[in-house]
Amino acid sequence: MAHTPSPDALHTLVAAAKHAHPNASHHCSAFIAGAPGEQTAIGFSDDGEPGGTAGRPMFQVLNGSGIGEIGCVVIRYFGGTKLGTGGLARAYAQAVSQALDTLPTREIIERDTLVLHLNFSQEADVRAWCAENALPVFSADYDGDGVRLALGWPRDKPLDLSPLENRLKSTLTIESDTKASQPDPS
Image 1 (cartoon, rainbow, N blue to C red):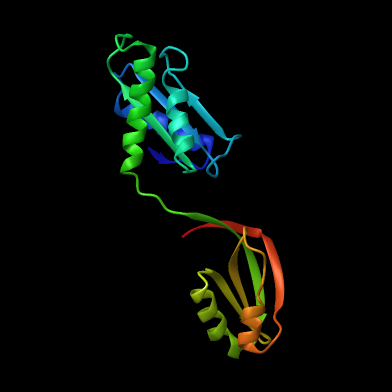
Image 2 (image 1 turned 30 degrees about the horizontal axis):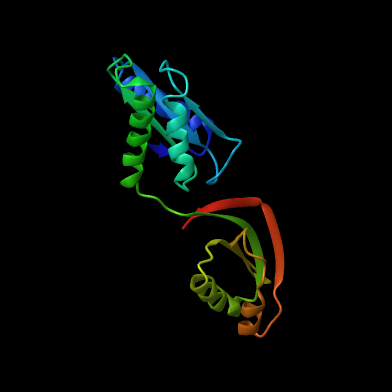
């Protein structure tokens, strides 16, 4: 199981599994390369197992987990269908479920970069307010007119800096910098 933000990341994971276990009969995989519930950047492979007995059950467990940007490979050495197709599906799903039980996770918050133009005297108060509100400060640029502070605003929250403006007793000049948008592991 690994962080899989793109289909290419899954291909890397599968290649590593095949390199580490070259004599295995099957390297079945599943992934969600996006937010939980993503339905476009997804995929799964039975890798020679009977159709629908490995990759799809693995994907269904991932999809039901509420976790995104995740991929997994289940390696099977023994061939044959003594378990039957239902038993194979349950075994692959159970392997993924057990791995998820111990998987460390973190929340990723998609953010847009906002650039605030401040007086030098406001910077400490703005940084303190950002810390209190779990807003990361990406950079600070200084010039003769003051400070340009770039911070990450969560995409799922409406922009409201009025509490900060009330604290500063001043209106802020805000510039949106969508080119620098980035997710933030929080």
